[in-house]
Length: 367
Image (cartoon, rainbow, N blue to C red; front, side, top):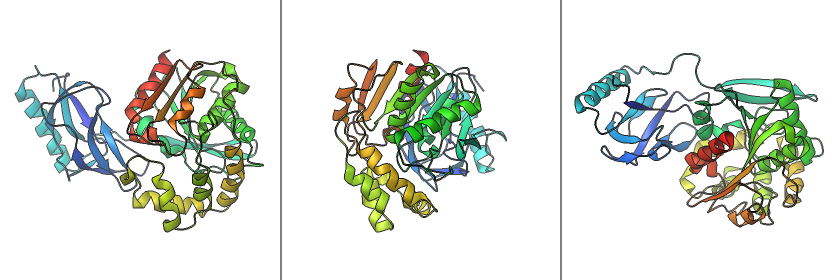
């Protein structure tokens, strides 16, 4: 195959994902695309998302039509410069369709994220890691989230860097003990995580509550943080939907939880039945209700707008964020190297516009 042909493969969005379904193509053969452009909408058994172009070029062939399924790692489309002969494209597409017909994923065994857990001050902290590189990137999720909140950015970042996504105390597969629920408890957990894994200096990325945690870590140990990227961070600016926090923490049923989840996205279709079920299952675990209740007053009281930040800083908000509105960006505009607002994205901007967030993190890493 001509080495100028780039396969667009079905991504692995989660350890349990084996296949994904193309629900719609956003580009057509012959369209010129840039790296990070949306190519197709994908639905899995847990989440729906946008497949982005892994490189710039021309979309020369679609292998899996809308409505079709493909195993993780299989090519669903081909990108190439316009001067690559069509017969080369046809041959590569035929080979990809043969693999698809056999249900044979192109992903080698042993690829994808690895998971683990470490003990930090008597608490078990779970994490996922993938990729290699001299510039480690550590991702810290928001209130009620977990390490899988970063699925859409973790995989592309791992193509160039060692990436770590951890579950904060009270979340995911980590211990549910959050102590008094103070910000220092969470920040100390992240610093302890770096210590246990021997990560001396990292590029730290935090979303929402995780943004406040990441900022606190950078304030406590600035020598450990090469750069700080804040994604719709809580505490930086006065606007916050406290009704969302209390509603999410207190919801016990699908009927109660769904309207609060809808506030997270500009596109309400992102709130899938499986997402609701997964969060309800998490909220029923022993200790979760107490942990979330302890964290709510901490988040409501956050006031970090004047907290010194002595590391290179970048920030991004979704223009349609209804939880931590983009108007809060004004608190960082005179201190950050870059502040972006992504129109058409909500509070989960890293899920609705992962290419924008990935590019921002890459700029933070490269300086």
